[in-house]
Image (cartoon, helix red, strand yellow):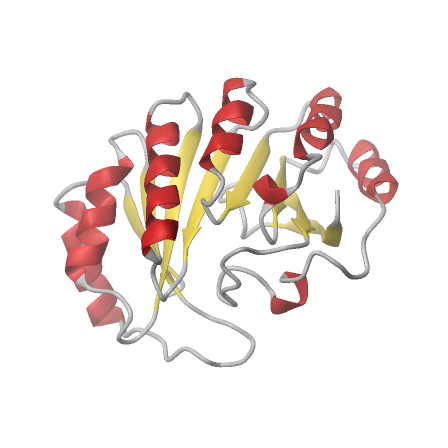
Amino acid sequence: MRIGRFVRTSLSVWKGRNSCIIEVRGSLLRSPELCDPVLFEPDGACVEESEIFDYISSHTDSLDGITVAGGEPFAQTDLYPFLKRLKPLKKPVHVRTEGMFPDVLDDLAGACMFDFVTVCVPCRGHTPEEEERFGHTLEVLRNSDTEYEVDIHVCEGCASKDLIGGIAKRIGPSGKLAIVSAKDASGQYKPLKKKEALALYESARKYLKKVELKGF
């Protein structure tokens, strides 16, 4: 795979787990709150897979999981063989996705290649084509045995109660929703105030039990 960055340990990307983070290159949505712009392009400096497998193999006692993020993991044509190589390490796998490749997600979920999926929604929302793909992704997850969460990134003026409520309604009873304070290195986004975030939270709670705020 085209891996742009390898973070050896993190307590923040997968709640309750000390996991390493494998960040692939290439992003379809190109939203800085979802992905470091350095990773937007598929071309560029890459980390050798051998470095990653050597590290994980020698830290099985301290690692609680492996996160594959990016970028967009499901756009990687060799994601399946990569995940298959992770299996013998016997560590839970978490995939963070932009939710634009539902058919690939469906195939790999059916093959039980990961344990947890986070679908990330950008501040700007989705175009009609992206919305269709996102809806299909939610449908796949609702019909799977995979644990999943939707992270919707919000900033001032970018999210309405109707939008949040609509997403919460579609997630399904086994899923979770996280309302995330959008941040990016450019400072492009003005943070949403806690009071406004709580109003979004209450809107989501009308349709979904598992809702949380992150970063407020």
